[in-house]
Length: 462
Length: 105
Image: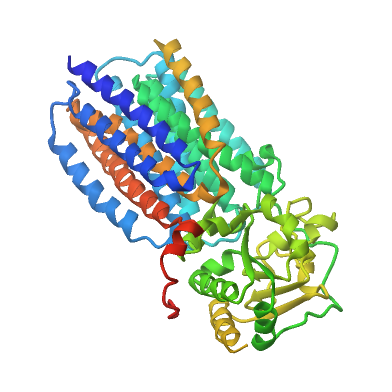
């Protein structure tokens, strides 16, 4: 009887999870959909508490309370600009939870004298290996995003070879434990090795490639959860793990397409790690035109269509609220403002959208690259705020450039381009941006927030 | 038994693919937060590990897993809700007057 109740609550939870994710296809229905999913989660937890194998509730209560204490600030107090590292950290938690449950299961079996079946050992081993890799990887990712670790790629010669061999070693240990699950040393060595491997995998990746990494780690964590479900025979874990894994997988495919890297190139950790070859072009002999706030304000004030291109620099400068002010001002004067969001702008998928939404920019002004690229031809001004590689025409023209082939925003098709930048330092890929030297581009140097605030002030005077 | 589970996996993966490929890039960050919150379902396994009182080690590991999974659930659903609250369309905004143009720092 109790079992039926438990299984029933799991079915309800599965349905609500799927409906919740589906509601994310429409911004207006999304919030209520996810709230329903939360109810589903409560059902599943309540159901589990009735499981007859649970006989001691003390640690559970303690764990739940501590979890709420940690989770609440992570949900309510983390600012949107720190979203990428927060997501990376919560991926650490979810991978850790899956890994520990797997280890507990193995330990319980072994110490009570039963050797797990090959199938169960396979699922457990796979899940723990993947989980440990994800824990290592997400910790490094979170550290890099928070800039506690260097966001530059950390590489050394022969790194891919070392990584490859190490991985083979881990796989070897995995196979060994499946063949003979009683060999505990192999099991525990595999876990330690996987954790190290996760670190080694993400260390060579530069900040700009983080969106793909985070999405990929998301799918690994989902797969680990899924494998846990196979190992302990829990169907709802399989379902939510599959949903999670699919989501991460799709996102990382989208990201790598947006950066024009093949997915296998991404999978084998070669991304961001290649020593950055200098592109054939140098900036010797070229000059940039800098513009004053007053002149930029005039351009913006009289523009019919302004397309704003936000980038990581806008996030760093916390300029999203002033951007909204500026766009409202332009619209009050009869102009139209649209925001062009490149898929890999920022440090994680959709990062710019969330920042702008937080600043109260209505979401129907936020356009993807495919939707907006054709509009640059009729734009009077393309306003580039802290974005660099996503508007670099070298991706179109320069075969020797590391970013060649990456789809970009056609900012150079606009009648005039104004770039807000702190200085002439190169962006993450370390290459020159031809857009800056184009004859219709002018640079407005300074911190984005300061420049934008000054622009707002000037436009009011025009 | 394992075959049934495999069926479930395949079907769930299909559903996942079809549902998620329709989420617009606009909502990709809330999507990551949402899938993260949902992954907190591993709490189910952690609760059993922490409560079955099989042995000390398993209970300890289960305890840590419960903490991790719970903070993901609480934090994850809260932050997803917080983010989704912020996405307003232009139609909704026309009703309210534009907020005072005092510079927000």
